[in-house]
Length: 172
Length: 394
Image (tube, rainbow over all chains, first blue to last red; front, side, top):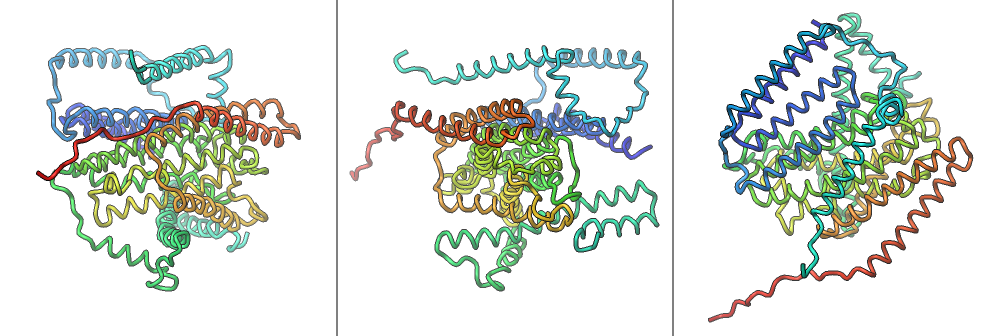
């Protein structure tokens, strides 16, 4: 076992454990904090795959923005932020069924994939993955259309948020 | 290369040669990495002791006082006395506090700042790790700082702490936006996000090429560290001490140390992005000189932060948000677009530097007259309390 595999096993265990703890905790803020640990574990796995940019963006977007907004929302909406709540609701059975189906499908698909045992190829030292990602995002042969569509969608969301947050004019 | 020109290189060569005779290659590399981590983070934590003294002394001069002057020469040992006091204080955990989050938050706040030092290029060849996404990394680890504030505020189970945490998060998330957009300007100028290349490309300091961006970066950084005039998150006249109200002893000390170290880190980052990092006469040949240059420039940035802190009063929360969203963010977007266009049009041209300067000046003038025109047109709403019945003696 190489050091990298050891790190992967450890991080994988931590990620799965915190994901499990996140769903079973009755305290919502604790659940959100464990979600952050799980997301950070995913970022570490990106680092192990030599995808530094994705790892940093994972931390920046998921932990820096989404998770913090979640905690913020939980704190603002609960009258006493530390009150415990029932962690299961009436849709418990459906959730179990759906996730079991999803896990089954994933296992079947990954089992049929030929390259699952392949080792990650080592990158040439001269290639800068960030430069290649950047030019792929804006080149016509690459992902320029999805990129632009996503940008327009985000712009629409931004304007929508502005419209929602605008103060109502007096007298209406 | 002699020992005095590059002591870190010499010492690390010595240790790794010694370890290599005892252990296999992989273990040597691992131990050297760990030693590097210990060295960089110890540097950060030790410099805090000095920073606290410097800040107290300089703030005192601004306020026409002497500052610490009893313990040791010029009060240099005052911080050690304070540290001993903090360590020996009783460690109180509120009865209804969330113990896990309460205890992790101070550690996380220090870690979030120390992580930035991993990508600081001290001198040619002296860097923790040269990530090709260094700038984004700095922004990403900053989110752990926000997280620690939220955890501290929530877990204390105190309404003032929670209010402080809410204010802090509103402020920190908002000011991340102009800060990240302005950081894209040095990235554009250096053609990359790596910190080493960022310094190497600054044959002309970026503060000359993008002066307005530099100022926006400094302003939004001051907001990120929550110092006056942006210290609403620990406004003692309104919400006791904000998110660390319930912390005592060394746990409070850790928040305190993290804040001071963050302020200095901001100065160092300003030096790296806009003042040419370790660049200076003779720094290429002698890395030790590079470190001295970087520290001098970093202290200059830190001095500006202290200067602003002792000069300006706290701003109101709506002004704070308006300044960010209605002024800094559009301005930084305009600067980013301008820099991108000028860089493309004047690529490899001698007019690049003057064009960037003129563009910056134009944007500054336009934004000044624009905001002035708007502020005259907008009628200001007076903030008043509702009329309340006055209590009268029966």
